[in-house]
Amino acid sequence: MKLFELTNTVFLKTDLHFKQMPQTLAKYIDYSLCQDEHFAALHKSRDFKHYSFGGLYTQKMVPGGSYAQGTTATFTLRCFDEKLATYLQTALRENINNPHLIVIQSRKKHVPQFFISELYTPTPTIVTSGNDDKDRPLYWTLESDGDIMKLQKQLHDNAAKKYQSFFGEKLEEKQNFIQLLELKNKVPQNIHLNKDGKGVRLFGNKFKIVPNEDETSQKLAFTAMACGLGEKNSFGGGFCLGKGLG
Image 1 (cartoon, rainbow, N blue to C red):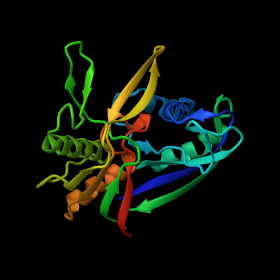
Image 2 (image 1 turned 180 degrees about the horizontal axis):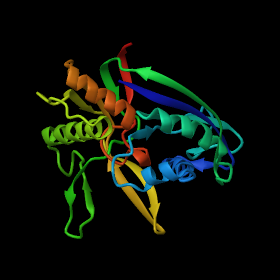
Image 3 (image 1 turned 90 degrees about the horizontal axis):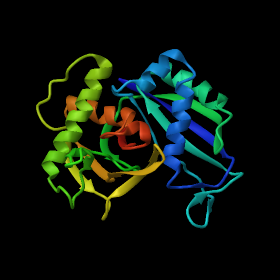
Image 4 (image 1 turned 60 degrees about the vertical axis):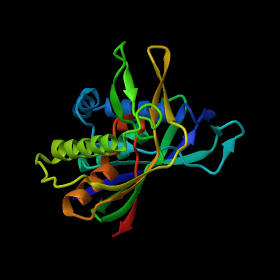
């Protein structure tokens, strides 16, 4: 197993508020995918996308929480598919008409599977726990649900389905891949979207996870590294940082 990682340097054409950042990056990636027939089909598919991306990182912010016009920042994108990584390495730099930013450099590297001792999610991990009486999604939060065991099962099942979807094989699952889960926020974290002219918020949480040490658990932890933890990864949800032994 290995994943592919793009470290992308962007130039900010405008001030960009941090609440706008996830959707801005998601739209930038989506537009780039849609310039190729094969990857446009991936974008439009309702199946797993098998990639994840983190937020912008910069040392220069405008007071009020905006990335500053005229400065540079970086974001990371990961996936299992080398063809996707190779395509995006070029396509992201060719996406020159975005009004907010442009990728000016994209560096690709491959990361072989390594033993993961801890996972952290710097972007909110989204997990739905049903629908309300108006068929709107309900998101898992400690206040609204609080069932940690159900949360762990959903995170495990999601990772297992992503693995099976990409590799075409079902893992032998003897236990949940999560040994320890720690909630890192006191209140739910949001990803802000604009859909059909209306503001939408995806509620999630930031976690520290200690995976189990068996082979299956480590494969699922590595799957979370590549594809993201939980749902809505193509909107910036559940991006993972891993700590362990190479």
